[in-house]
Image (cartoon, rainbow, N blue to C red; front, side, top):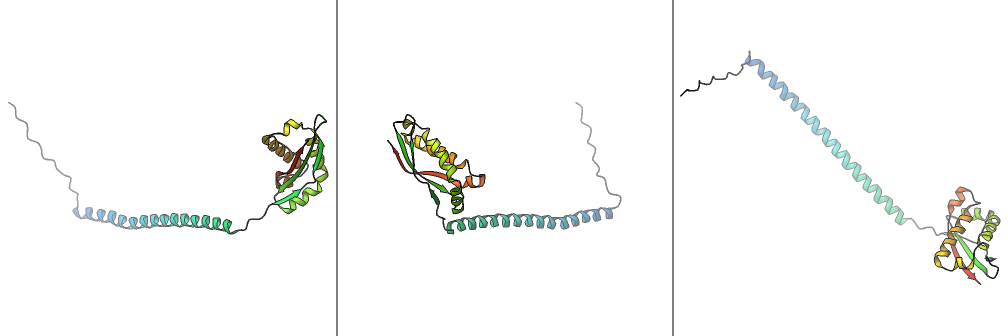
Length: 175
């Protein structure tokens, strides 16, 4: 049986001067002691800034909602058109209809009055092109309201046309 050769002891390198190794370690520790508080202060500042930003955003949103609730609701404005009476397609039936336009504000209502002859002409042509069967259902009447809204907005400028919000029926009689 062969025996293993004895392991050689490993030697550790010894610094040339033991006195020079101590100052290098002290410099590393000094840098660490100086950098660590700076990093912690920076992180603390970022955290505080983020907290302030988030809190301020929540407060602004809550204040805006509160202002909306406290603001009085402005009543809607309406423009009532004179009733229309037209013969329907086929000649045997006629339609009498009363319309009210809901507008954004009183200024829009006043502007619409300047265009009333053009609006009435467009609506008379639209209404007289209908057949009695086309106006029987609720869905057909909603479609007619959309068509009237489109025809009403047509002669108006873009700013005034935006202010016409909806068409409401005051009366509808088909005979």
